[in-house]
Length: 255
Image (cartoon, rainbow, N blue to C red; front, side, top):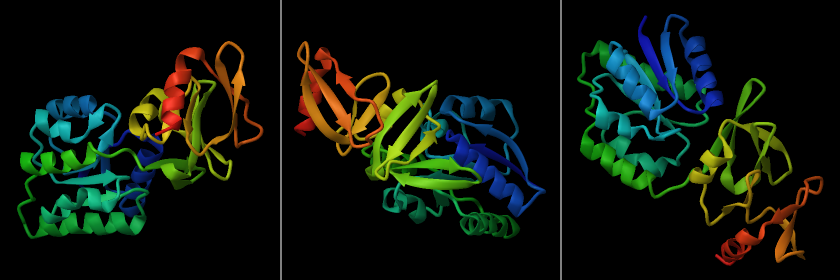
């Protein structure tokens, strides 16, 4: 039996990963699930080193690479990410494992098998160097989130941001609506999502909505120099653009 730490801020993805781990080997002990850079740093400072860490690259309060800036991690790390493979190809060069979301059981088993073989052969684990982290961090910080992992019943669904019409909040929960007008619960606040998506494609129109440039069916001049937006999803309410946001909204439309 060996001990595993999961560092993942998307609750559906974390639950799915833990389910896959336990299904693969019920003897594996999952020590904790951490959802932030700060929480991970505190955990590593207060606990013995685990045998293996699964670590999402993008956490609630920054890139997980910031953890390595603050604490020394000497155990093997398998990174998980929704970024496209080319963005983290440096990991392959340096023999550090990573898994693309949504993670499948076969990919997980292959990564853990490699980890077990490394232990049996007493092979020294590849060093996660500052140079490596800075190289990948530089690439990732130029990118926006390209996919959202959504839990649908007992399954995970990966939705490309290009297929999302808008995000909205309702009764303290956050949802996204896809181009086929299906809605899914998202495990992020609108404030957090506004930092994660490309502001050339998405606009925070008010406290309730973040719109994509593909979501709008019509824009109508409204009273007091405001605008009214009708969305392609016909049963969705019209959105009033306040006067102080009209100029920024028009500039966004013209990008």
